[in-house]
Image (cartoon, rainbow, N blue to C red; front, side):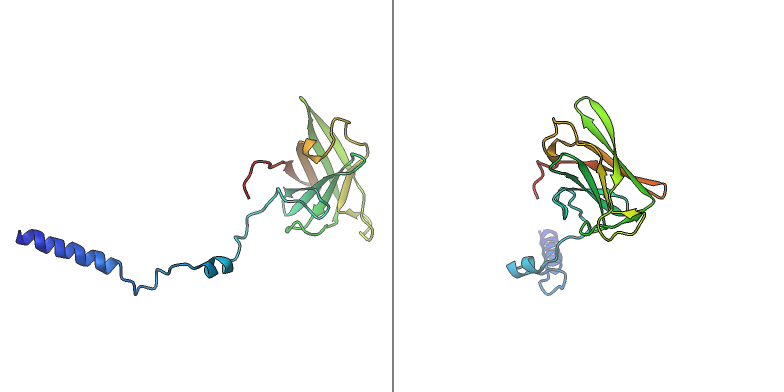
Length: 166
């Protein structure tokens, strides 16, 4: 019995030492801590809308914003890494590969520089023709966009996140 008592006291002492409330490793969090905690960075929300109301896609160091205009022309705006401002790129071309039912159609997006952009550079690319009548809004657009700058191609998927819980 004496052996059991010594082992019991030893176990109790070890548990008590491990639960030292003076340790700087543990601190209960308050509501204030939760309010002051900065947001997690590095998590891109590609389901957010861009500055022109379109869907954001990742295109290498840039982002793209895909917009379906009221005349059903598809527009790609090249945006900065934060997806906030347009960035004019030189020596660039863009193409959309769209899924239309069972078929895929390649749509060239021609350079349409915004006012003030330097000659030979553009942040806006647009289809010359409207998309088919079956496409009523951007939610009907599925596929990808490829932006090629100085021979380097970057492709971004046009995704519609309806079921996520952010």
